[in-house]
Each structure stands twice: as C-alpha cells, then as structure tokens.
Length: 54
Ligand SMILES: [Zn+2]
Picture 1 (spheres, protein in one colour):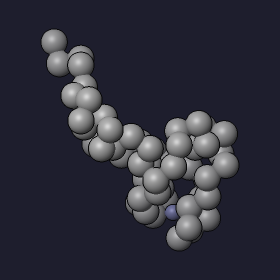
Picture 2 (cartoon, protein in one colour):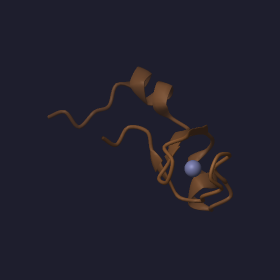
Picture 3 (cartoon, protein in one colour):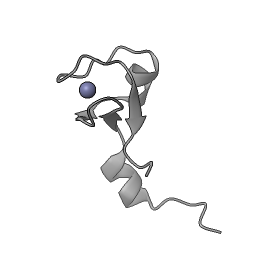
Picture 4 (cartoon, protein in one colour):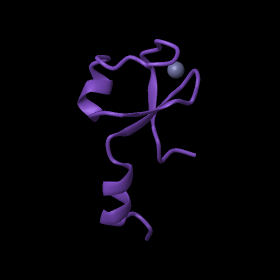
C-alpha cells in the first residue's frame, strides 16, 4: 500500500547520506557512495547510509 514514496520527499532526501561512524550528513550521488569515492569530511570513513533509513 505505502510502497510509493512521494516525489517531493524523494527529491529532498535524494543524494544525502549519513556517515555510519559519526552521523555526519554528506550530500553526494548514490553512485559515488557505492563506488566508495566519498570520504567523510569529519572522520574519513567510507561507509555511508541513506538518510531515509530510521
Ligand atoms: Zn564520519
């Protein structure tokens, strides 16, 4: 039923990821996160999660 995500929310949270180690928000592209090309500016970690996950 609630499978469809509203487009507005999708746009708002798209390309924003959170560092798994220090919870710093980083705006980048998902492909760059998957390819581990993104480094956390605070702790230098390469592991991120999408912002929408609770
Ligand atoms: Zn970090």
